[in-house]
Every structure is written in structure tokens, then in C-alpha cells.
Image (tube, rainbow, N blue to C red; front, side):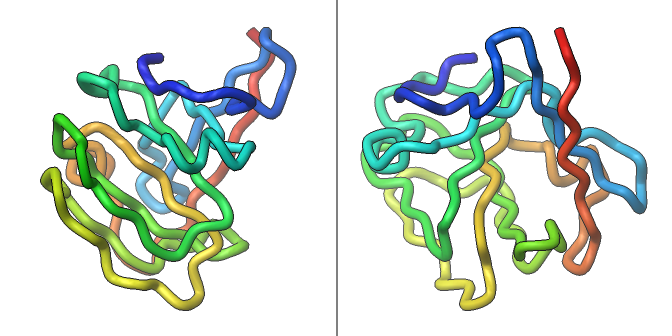
Length: 133
């Protein structure tokens, strides 16, 4: 995983977090990191050159994001507390601000194409899966 920051994986190092779309049964990410600390949330993906194809970063709580000083575009999926998709941003370019999503509890930052390839749509429910590695 290329995302920087500390405290991102809330489970033991041998556990892997994945996110699946329940409607399509397609994975959005098979290597999810969680921005758990203030510093990890502040830094996010800044300073990184990109995301690995199956990687992702989850930021919570979060209702809006920016891509200032980013070096690459990414997909963003805003979810509520039940992991229902509230808003999608495909290929968010550097130096942009997302809309403020009032009911969002968090956002998944994913490689460009993850939304399209998983068939994810607004209103879909996602599932967080924890697997022992």
C-alpha cells in the first residue's frame, strides 16, 4: 500500500480489510487502510505517487475532501453509517474540493476506475470484510 500515515490499519497486522458492493458482489478494494489518527486524516494520500490497483483509504468521520497538492486523480465514495453510498466522484483531479455530503460518515479514496469496474451506484450498500491474513 502506498498511502502514508500512522494508525491506518485498525486491526492486527495479519488482518486485511476489504470492501465489496453487495448489489454487484464486486470488490472496490482488497487492501483498505483506515485513517484513524488526526495526522493520518490530515495527510491522507498527500505525497504519494498513486494507489495500487486494489488499494484504498477510508477516512472517517468525513463529509468533504480535497485533492490539493495531490499528484494523481482518484475515485471517492461517500458512505453513511450503514455503508450506503451517498455520493460518487469518479477520477477526482488534483486541486479540487468535493461537495459537502451532509449525511456522510466517511469516504473511500480508491484508484481511478474502481467505481466503474465495481458497478457501484448511489444507493448501493457496501460491506466491510475483515479477513485474517
